[in-house]
Image 1 (cartoon, rainbow, N blue to C red):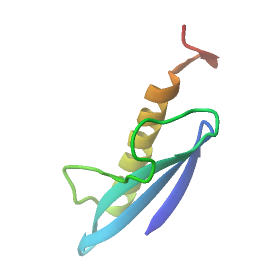
Image 2: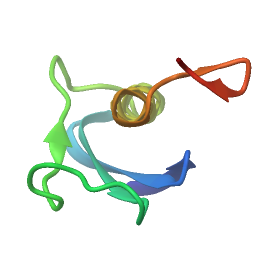
Image 3: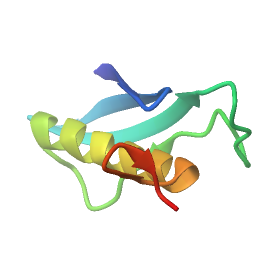
Length: 84
């Protein structure tokens, strides 16, 4: 199963692979934003630990992990303004 989530000019690509009945291993990949050079392998997928997860939980955790990674790269927003 696959889902793409847009976030702050990036795309979080989430992939689920069945590991048991109704349980999934999940990985995500961040793509996008032409104005920011990322260090490292751009094609690398990041597997999430402590799985397997249910489908809803897997998508949620991968989305939050991807958003956190993007926030680290760009900085967090405070009242819709860049952090100082």
